[in-house]
Image (cartoon, rainbow, N blue to C red; front, side, top):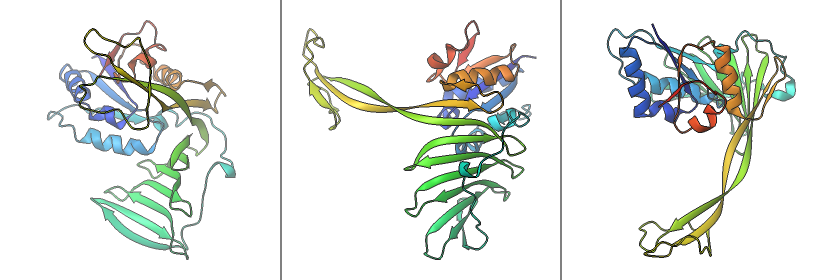
Length: 285
């Protein structure tokens, strides 16, 4: 029986029709399938699992194994978390207000000033999914993520509502990996024809570019500054640093011992990821 693994790094990838099509094809051909939810934004994992549950698998389909980074590194060595690594306020003395978001229960904790200090989301079986912590301006500053056994497996820290770093914990609650996000400025260029029905964004600047002329009409060229996020990883087991998240994913796949398995990667990420998998046959979705 063949084996296949999907490296899923975004919720959007799970929603793709190509993901579903490749998955069903493998199942029909009797493959053992593993889906690795490899998001370093850990709060996306429970959402990705929910998206996967919406896929209508054929009756009698063998179980597709769903795992996360926390499952892979549960038994790896780590270091004790420092008090400065995370917030751990006592919520038991705060006013608690329960409400619902669809079938899920939300518990909000209110301080004496009437501000929301924290918010816990529970699954339909009453297990914790996450707890959000807020600053005085109601901005998220930390998210604690829990597994189905109600164990804390990941902590996310925010700066100005933007995810700054994620801490992956092992089964003993020790820090195994730190993922740090960086923002890089990028130059963005657009060529727009006079007949274009969509105008260039207002924050772009028109520049003179004599090289962008066609035989029929001249193009207007606009430039602006874009931003992209890239992630670095640090292991607390061996203190190896990964300056590219795709180098870390390569190590994850090595740890899974999948030499004989088909590897499926999101086509939006396949160019960056494949350079760390030389000589390996990669499939996309």
